[in-house]
Length: 412
Ligand code: PLP
Image (cartoon, rainbow, N blue to C red; front, side, top):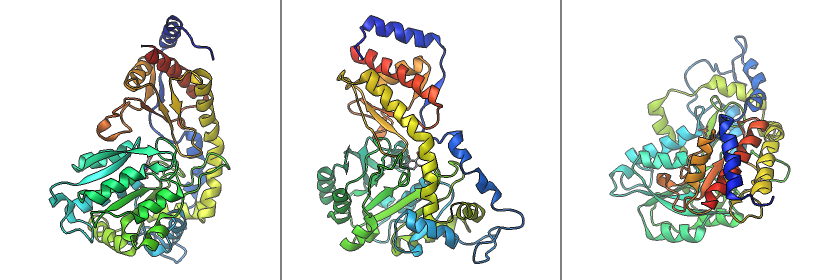
C-alpha cells in the first residue's frame, strides 16, 4: 500500500480514536470457541465413575506424581523414555517452574555445593525476546538476568557457550524450544545438541526447557524439534535439562494439567520437595483429561481443531501487516508455524510510543519491553501480538489501528 502522509496518518488515527474502541491484544489466552472444544470432558467423571484404570479412588489423597494413565500421556508429550521420568503437577507448568527455582534457591540441586540462595551471585541466561513470566521468576528470587539474543534457530549459541563456560555463577537458561513466545521460532537440531553438550562452569547448571507449545501447530506445515533429553543422555548430561508442559492451551487454560519430565535423580529431588507442600494433586482432573484424550495421539488430533480456529486469526494479522506495513522498511514480523504469538519489530526507539498511541486509541497491547529481562528492551523495538482471544473482527480492527500507530511513530 502507498505510504500515507503524516497528515493523512494523523487524520486516520483521530478517526479511530473517535470510535471509542476497547480492544485487547495483550495476553495469549485461548478464545471461548477453543475452550468449548474440551467441554465434553466435564461429563466424563461422574458421581458413579471416578476410579482410575487400575481402580484407584481419585477422590482421595495420594498419587503424588500423578495417575499412571496421565503419566503415560505426558511421557509421550514431554518425550522422555519412561513414566518414571514424569511428575504430574497441578494445573500450571509455571507453578512447577517457579517451584523448581524456589527449591534450588532454598536447598540447591543434587550437585549444588550450597543452596543457590547462599551463593554470592546466581545468574540466568534469558534468550530475548522471551516469555515475561520467566523473567519475573528470576526477578522474584533475585537471580541476575543476562539477555542473550534469540535467533531463528533458538538462543544464540555462540554467546551462550562462551558465557556458561567462563562464569560458574550462571546456573541456568530459559528456553521455549518450539514456537517460542513471542517469536514463534523453534530450536534447530544443532542448537539442541549444543545445549546438551556444551561445557558449563556450574556443575548444577539447568536448562529450563519450557515446551509450552509443542503440539500447537497452525497447519500441516510444522516445525520439528530434536529430543533434548535423548541428546543429554547421550552426552552424559541428563541432569541438566528439566522439561515442562501443560494442557493449559489444549483443554482449559485455568483447569488443565501440567507436568515436568526429567532424569530420575531430578524427579526424586523434585518429589522430595513436592511432598512437603502437597499430599497429592487433583487426580479427578487428571482422570477427566485421560478419559477425554485417551493417549497422546488423541491430544494431537484435538490440536487440529484448535488450529482450525486460530490459524485464520494468525493469517489475518500477517495479511494486515503485509498490506499496511509491507515494503515500507519500517517494521519486520515473524510468521510462526505454531504457538500463540507474532513478534513485531518496529523502528528502534519506537515500541513504547506505538503501544502508547495504540492504548490511547483503545487498543491494548502487551507493554513494550515486557519481552525482555527487567522489562527493558534495549532497542525499544519489540511488540508482542497475541491474536487468539479477540474475535476476527476485533483482530482486524486492532491490527489496522496498530499499523497506523507504527507509521505515526516511525514518522516522528
Ligand atoms: N510457558 C510459556 C512459554 C507460556 O507462553 C505460557 C503461557 O502463556 C506458560 C508457560 C504458562 O503455562 P501454564 O498455564 O501451564 O502455567
